[in-house]
Image (cartoon, rainbow, N blue to C red):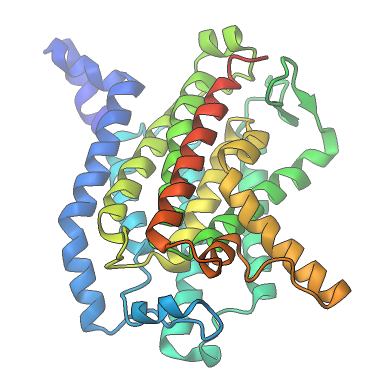
Length: 362
């Protein structure tokens, strides 16, 4: 919005010319989201406490989590609200990808909200939306996103069904398989972040680091000179997603201020499903779906641990891990929660750096 209001004034005062630059707007999108999160966080936590919107702890989980019972949850509302406000302020509204990203945030956020609300209010016996229903809703949203995305790409864009492979110079064309692949990426990303959300600051911290990587990836993907130099697919207009990623970084850091151990608020499925869905959507937009395997390595490991655990128990009647997802296994192995979180963050930072290195190593 600010671009459309203030950039035209550059012909009267040159200083307004800064609103033309994605880099400038990205920095202030992050600052705005962070500031809004800090400003509103205390009030949101107080309101949730007053409404008794507190977390219900799993009886089969680590006993150390019992002290977290009653901590306000559904705090993803704070992340999504501040992020959306910042995005609308700093992104160009004529961006064809803006509304796609916002749809992703709202769709997956609403699914998460319904799940959290049903748990908190006792509807559906406090278990939330059945997994099969949630998966169907996620898949419907992902199908809409992928269909919309393919429709708004330019007719002369020759890489509609191609993906970029890390460490390789040439893209891989999936042809008719691409829509199915893209839907899988978005749904998987949403669920993987959701599975990671089990410790104070773990999911939002790792998501923020992934978003930092995509700040760079979206910028170079939308810049024809950088994309040609780096031998990656240039997606016209994708540069505006840099502002979206920066807003996610700011909102994530702002929420982490309150969510760091010991957490004053949890983001719940409202936040985790939406953030994962957004990250997956952005990866699809810039044709960097495979990078999620690297930058989202923590999420991949968490999801795989659940798959391995369930498969092993069904086939052999034995568990591989003490408890899944993976972070609970380490908890039950005696690693203190605060140390475990920081170690996961360290791995996430290393994966972020490795992700950025793939842009050049081809």
